[in-house]
Length: 226
Image (cartoon, rainbow, N blue to C red; front, side):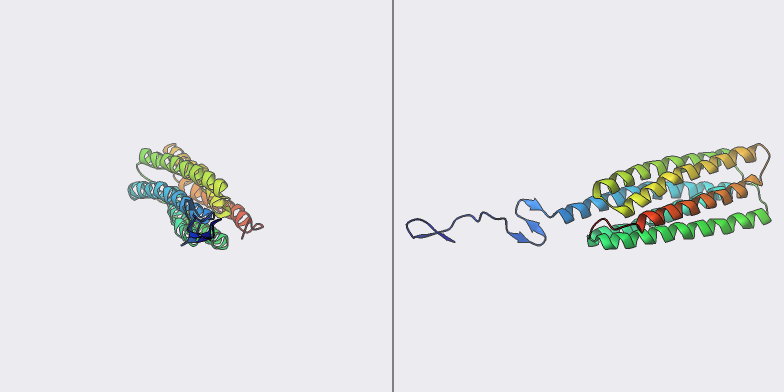
């Protein structure tokens, strides 16, 4: 209520926007916009990697390739990192994002150790993979799926200034290179060297461990905001 020049009371529209429930009239709180955008990025990457993992899983059952299994375990674990990242964006907290980033790194580490165990076991007890054409196709699917997921995460992470998303994006981009190992395994086994499959699986594990270290450095670097 404001008083006009004649002294009579008259209601005038408030010049300032009223705030309630995290919104302003005509505006949306920037933290809410960032949260929604972050959830869209995380959801898109999850869908891409989930489809990749499902298709690779079906092909693994037919081929029994350790190189593919290493890639599959890693891609499935990578897809699951959407859970802590999504929760962090829902909380609209950069501190929670850093915590989610650490969970992402630990998930990568667990997938590497698991893949290494399977690879070593297969070196001790050799069993050549089958259906090599399908195995090569699974590797190609991994390359494409990870490359697309990396693009989505990196673009979103840079736009939102999210270290966790950027780390996950670099991780997925490196995974596209890792998936090339599956194609290499199919090619080498076809040339008559079945022992190459678990050895390549072990090499994939070493690359994943390197990715783990790089992601750890990104996530634990100086905070970018509150």
